[in-house]
Figure 1 (cartoon, one colour):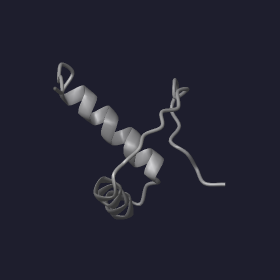
Figure 2 (cartoon, one colour; figure 1 turned 135 degrees about the vertical axis):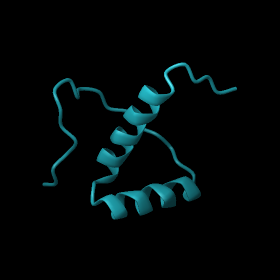
Figure 3 (cartoon, one colour; figure 1 turned 45 degrees about the vertical axis):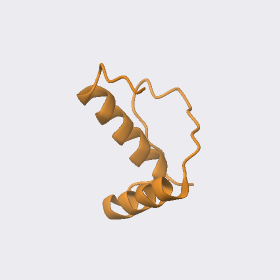
Length: 58
């Protein structure tokens, strides 16, 4: 069993649908970092939300 992204409070599951290009970018990023896709997504989402807390997409 692979190690998952774990931290205190990590209790929520989110599912997303990605287009092929975005998925390829994610796979490339996780291969460079050596992390799992789940960990890569969690870290990048957390980073984005902290850096852009008031970002609104229209």
